[in-house]
Structures are given as structure tokens and as C-alpha cells.
Length: 123
Image (cartoon, rainbow, N blue to C red; front, side):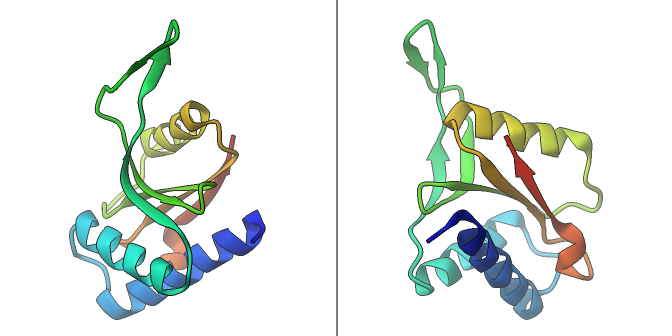
């Protein structure tokens, strides 16, 4: 599967989950249901994947976790917040750099229309 196909499946699955659950739940609920939906579609999904920092050839676990890592390629950072702030975009960009990946999705489920809560970002 190509990157655009994978991100398309993720967005489609997220919209399906949002239509079914609506806004107002905890991020952990959306994470679990979205991971289930993506796996049902045949995609490889890892949740809460540890993301260490490598400093001077030493790998340090400092508590960073990827919400979803799909097909060993796409980082998905989930939010369930009233207002998106630039810090969330910086967080995703940092994760992309640390993991040496090109594409990530920032998805906020606390919106009326999910298309207004999705941002694709590139490293």
C-alpha cells in the first residue's frame, strides 16, 4: 500500500468512528475503536508505541508514546480537545523526526465534522 492509500484508509476509518461515536469521549476510547477499525481493514496498527530519544548513541525512554503507528509508516496523533493549539502540531513533527518518518496525521475527535479536525503533516 502506498502512503496516500494508507492515510486515506486512516481518514476514512476515523470518519466512520466519529460518525458512530460522536464527539465528547476520551481520547483513549477513540484510539481503541480506531485501532480496531483499522485492523479490521487489514492494516498493521501498533498503539502506544514507545518512542525513545537517541542521544550520543544511547536510547533513552523518556515517556513519549505514539498513539497509533500504522503500517510501519504513518504516525497518528489523536486528540479529543476543544481547541487545537500549535503545540500539538509541534509534537507530531517531533515524533516524525524522532521516528524518521515522513507523514503523520493529527486527528481531533472533539469537533462537529471530523474533516475539520484532521491535519496531515510532513517531515
